[in-house]
Image (tube, rainbow over the protein chains, first blue to last red):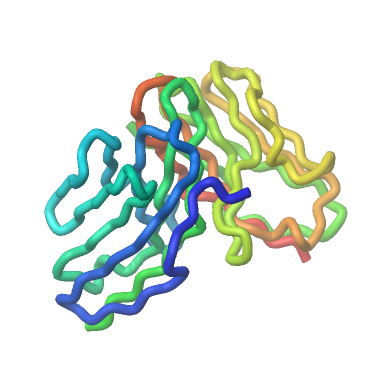
Length: 112
Length: 114
């Protein structure tokens, strides 16, 4: 079964707007939550990551919000730009394991 | 570092033919992953290796698929015989074992089986 559930499947945002992608998980053993960004014709690349001991992590225009009690986390892209148009994957992994569990991906389109 | 190197970038083959995809992980990375990406199913983990040893191949769809890692710098994914439903983008990724290390993905091989 899908260990990490991601929504929405696709998202269209105007330039300058905020893009929000949500993920949820069930396994409380997960303790590292990365986000990957994939441009067409390329492999996914690590964008930003968070551990559950913090509620928020910000890197430039990208912010992860983490709600441990709800077992949910989300990616916020502030001031979205056309260059942010890509597919975004959330993921989760647990200490001692080596395989990431990926969400199903969100295709983001930022309209100029 | 050149990153994870996959070859070929594109492969078009006829149904029933054998297909071999190749991957060179980043030097020093001791975990290697093979993924398949399709519109319908997203990213699927097929198999992964730690220190050249297959750890989990439960994602390999059927016996037509096989993967090897004869040394730390090379891995292959073979499909024999290939079928049209195998058409997808196949990614190889590598990482270090343990700790919170991200995966580094290759650029993928786009396989089309006609």
